[in-house]
Image (cartoon, rainbow, N blue to C red):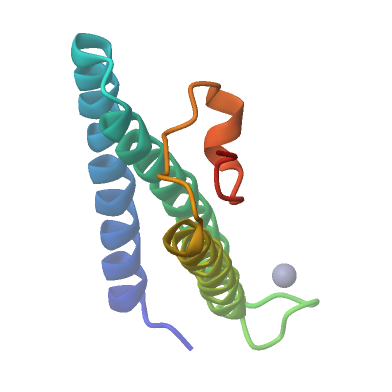
Length: 129
Ligand SMILES: [Zn+2]
């Protein structure tokens, strides 16, 4: 069971996480607009996903703060646990995809090139020679 104090702390941390992620997205959008650098675009995509995960966590924290009711006699704090599990799975899948892409590029016979087609940035296959 979460106490009112820990609920306040969780809400503060969740809000800070959303604010920081939103600030990073804004700054990286500006930087990408100024430079057009693909490395900034990749970092922007990372921060945008951070923002989405932070918003999901904030929603879970708000839901978890609800008091116990007829449907949930022990409260709603499991929502935070489920959100954390979802975030962990998301991070594990992203890590696996990045690792797979890195291994493929390392083993590719041709020199890797950054795809010029933006939709291909999300493909994990090595570039064709
Ligand atoms: Zn309920």
